[in-house]
Length: 124
Image: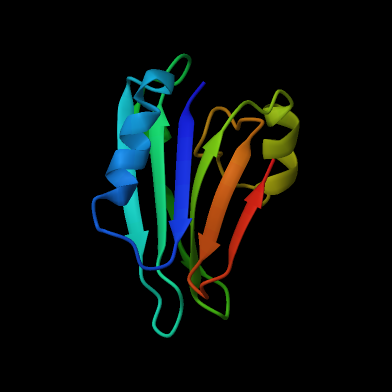
């Protein structure tokens, strides 16, 4: 299973890379780190090590950044780990009618997510 890491605050710039390297055994197929700076908010870092089993495409690379949408214009950045077994059901309910799903599979996940407003949430 993949490995994820996250920090908030002032840290050395190489910390996130060291954290994701420490879980390299969990995801030898790819890695990604992203520092997020929102004005007047605490800096957030998200890291990921990928274990590609079913989806070998670059569509599974993380951290994932969803572009701004809605009136607030906030983007969402996340890293996750796990499987969602009812992904077909979820995709039918989540996507707007008449649009194609971008992802073939959604996973059951542990997730670290941050929005452009600076709020961060971790779920399991």
